[in-house]
Image (cartoon, rainbow, N blue to C red; front, side, top):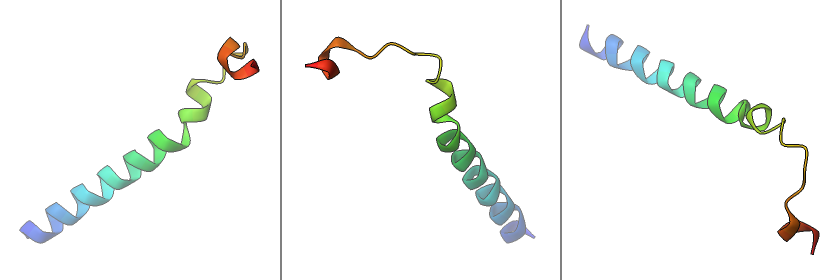
Length: 40
């Protein structure tokens, strides 16, 4: 029983991590200006 709970928790955390990494580009999408350091 305990193994099932731990397995489901690990699966949930893994899915959450994939969602956070996948949406990182959407979070910073509104920054439309390129920093001056990158233009040099």
